[in-house]
Image (cartoon, rainbow, N blue to C red; front, side, top):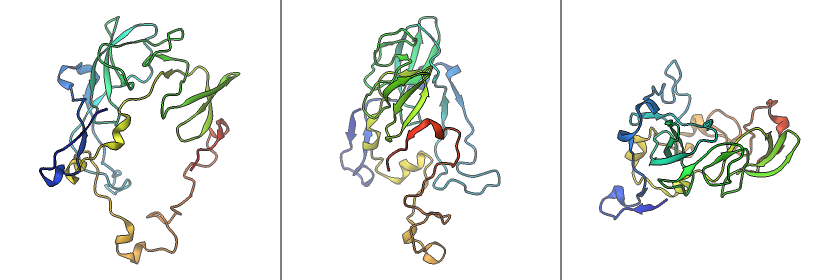
Length: 244
């Protein structure tokens, strides 16, 4: 990922840093993979009350149908385009399979236009290929052990948990790893993404907000409180909780 720093010519470009490689390419793609979506409420419920703060506005989006199952088994596909997707931080790439099928997948880091990929159980361990295996690549899950019907994975958060050995994984790492290095430079660009301004509670009127201990806007402890639902069905699959 190449970060382009703007020349300081206006206040909005003073701290701007954007990606200079991938551009949107929706005009040359398949219509059956792109369709409109209705973004319900933008942080509001059916009564119009804010349930998720700091959301609202934003530019219209077209949804790209992503193939997460990778069920085109043992058929080679070629990467035709690498595109920007407004619905996620990762890039996507259009795949043309040998049987004529066209699908979108998440862009594997390092893959370029013209590379070939394949999914299956007996495929070579190559970046972008999907097979029942997980390999370490930066901030991705690591396969620790396989025993019985389960495999032990270590997630980027430090959590160690069990999954079925029948699950498949994509070799490599999702692209656009440097998205946290981007800086929009101005509030208007943030507004285009549908994100409203965030105001700290300490600078608000303390009458309904001020408390003795750090708390959420709803009165719950803000520091160190576990947010996972109690007695969840998958508790017995977690061998070690994530580190704080």
